[in-house]
Amino acid sequence: MKEKYFVETEKNKALRLKITERCPWSCIFCHKEGGWDIDDINWDQETERVIQTIRDVIGIEEIHYTGGEPTSNKGISELTTGLVSLGLDVKTTSNAQLSKKALKK
Ligand code: SF4
Image 1: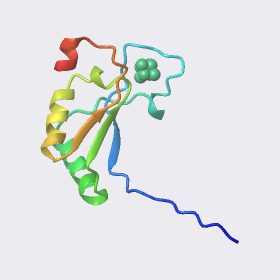
Image 2: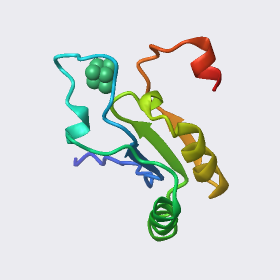
Image 3: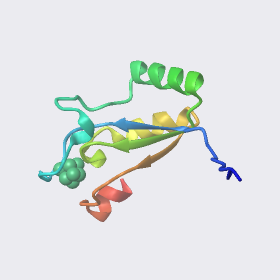
Image 4: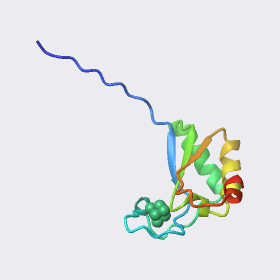
């Protein structure tokens, strides 16, 4: 008798966004998400237009920051505020090497 297997699938609604390559650490295993010499992503009209297009075409609901260390992006507050204004949830991966003050900010 042949066994039947069922696989549940779920649409990916999150976009991983490398918002900086900077990081105070230099781990030898760091792959920098496969990208080198990449500028920080900041909130401006071009970023808004691109993210809006991706949201509308692919149907994303969440942006997940990566890097480098995302909190090394000095414009992270404005970027996050802009993304949230588009109705997106924002999450981040961090090495957590930051002060309480920086975390609150
Ligand atoms: S981004 Fe992460 S893995 Fe890479 S150097 Fe920084 S702490 Fe290390």
